[in-house]
Amino acid sequence: MTGRVTDTCLAVIDGTSPIADNGKVMVTYTNSTDQLTVLNSGSNLHFYMSGCSALHIHSGDHAAFSGSYPVIPAQTITSP
Figure 1 (cartoon, rainbow, N blue to C red):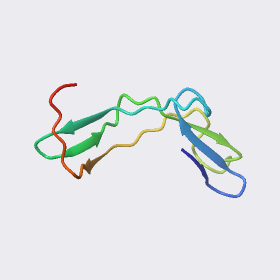
Figure 2 (cartoon, one colour):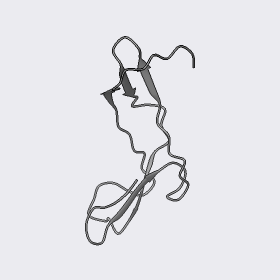
Figure 3 (cartoon, one colour):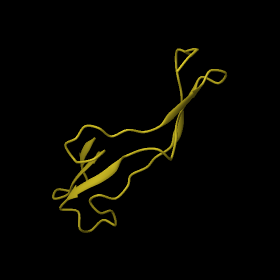
Figure 4 (cartoon, helix red, strand yellow):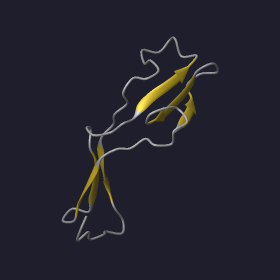
């Protein structure tokens, strides 16, 4: 994921480097509720920043997010 925060600030969220394309998050899926949940632990996401000195995020800082999302249409997962 790449995005401009300001005209001079470039931020990338990825795994082991800003060009690695190997950022990962851990998820679970619950058949009974059809919810995909992104877990707050187990990710390797990091911020990679350039020109963002005004922010309180630094290049290499760990990035994390969590949340639950409905899966439509519902799926049934029977094995890993």
